[in-house]
Length: 287
Ligand code: C2E
Ligand code: MG
Ligand code: MG
Ligand code: MG
Image (tube, rainbow, N blue to C red; front, side, top):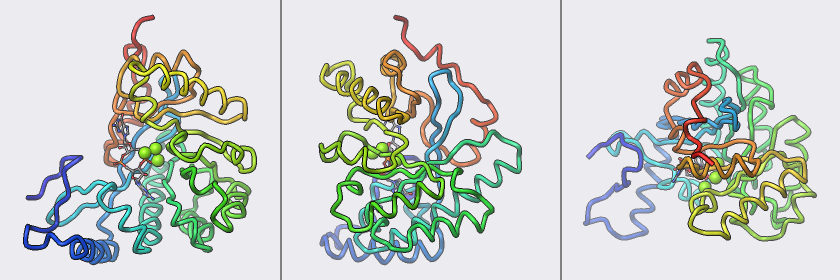
């Protein structure tokens, strides 16, 4: 059954093919074919500052599967990583983002940076920086068009070359954001060793702000930590007015989450850019 709704469970095979290895092989082959045919689209989720100004957006890939409908990244990113297909997939995401940015610029829409997720596996590719730069230059874009979202594991030092890559990327003018901040290893030493511009507070902390005092304390601490190091702090997974009010009162710089918008196709992102300022006042709980 093909369905286009977000969050649909991905299920390639019927019961006769329930062997895990077979399923994986099937998914790998299907993914390989999908990459050749470029069956991927970027959805975009807007990021707003606390006054409701659009300040950025995150590109989130979806697979437009011919029979399964819209497939979410949770269903295929790890297989793409394990099979080495993530490099080619990453190029597609980047090219699609570059094309969308150029179209939006052509339409005279406000230009905000687009955040691209880069997985740890992509960081093992010695050509990563050149790959990104060449896609950008094909489209006549400069590195400041992008934020690169990395996870903490990349910075933890086990990967040879990671430091060099990061310094190179920062020197080229890319902004580096740490995604899912707070969920990785607890060593914070890397924050001063690497050129990091932005922390994204993981949604698991944001989600339970109001039931869990510890989460509220951690969110406050992350905001203060980021600001002390001259970084921007963005909260992801903001779903309720109460969460937004807390983040605003604690001084977070920007928010991203279902409260404002789900990830949407590029045409709908275009509409969100045109509409401009959403009414965040109404979204904040009184007090
Ligand atoms: P992420 O980078 O941490 O992205 C945030 C995820 O949280 C997205 O899930 C987004 O749809 C979801 N989200 C946003 N706001 C809310 C909210 O208010 N509540 C809840 N419950 N969820 C919210 P999505 O799109 O399914 O992506 C999942 C993950 O897949 C991403 O997590 C990222 O790690 C990975 N991913 C997505 N696109 C790419 C890509 O192009 N390349 C790579 N390497 N990874 C990607
Ligand atoms: Mg991300
Ligand atoms: Mg995240
Ligand atoms: Mg996440």
